[in-house]
Amino acid sequence: NAGVTQTPKFRILKIGQSMTLQCAQDMNHNYMYWYRQDPGMGLKLIYYSVGAGITDKGEVPNGYNVSRSTTEDFPLRLELAAPSQTSVYFCASRAPGHSSTPLHFGNGTRLTVT
Amino acid sequence: GENVEQHPSTLSVQEGDSAVIKCTYSDSASNYFPWYKQELGKGPQLIIDIRSNVGEKKDQRIAVTLNKTAKHFSLHITETQPEDSAVYFCAASADTDKLIFGTGTRLQVFP
Image (cartoon, rainbow over all chains, first blue to last red):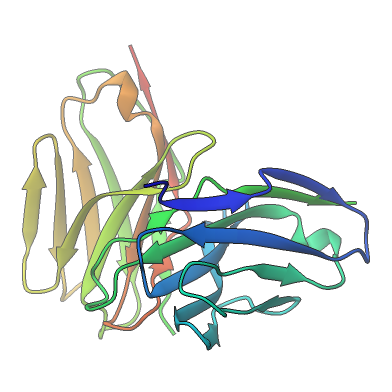
């Protein structure tokens, strides 16, 4: 039982390039989330999904896209990378039911856009 | 939408002392308040949570208190140890699918 797995761990992109951050969970969790973490800014919600085929915007969705074709995977796509997207990205999942079930986080992807 | 403020941003204590981190929230509909601990290079992990029908909850050396009238909640760590050094995040949720986080507190415990 690996929990939430994020790949890659680190990535450097040039401005305008695109990439996909991968996230997979093996806990059969319906709910999955993408957060970004900037220094002194806490965790900001980018997108989330309550099940396969369903996604919704969070606090800071601009510049990102997501898809949820399976329960296990929730990739985050950056189409035209910008320096403002330099951040640490965390994927999380939780069991269905009441919103107070705990979030399980991956170990993050550190992205630098130069 | 919900806004969560967290203070202080950094906190240094001597081993054995207590540490207190405070958060305020804006949405009176919020009813779930978890605390997460993030160690270096890792994702946050839940350490304790409280729901709005409870004023205080304890788990060994950590406790959380909630004041719904004032819309603030606090994390208390007693008898701090070096392994408590980490970044701590508070969060709030109003029975929705979204959890809104505070800006984090870096706690350093000196031996």
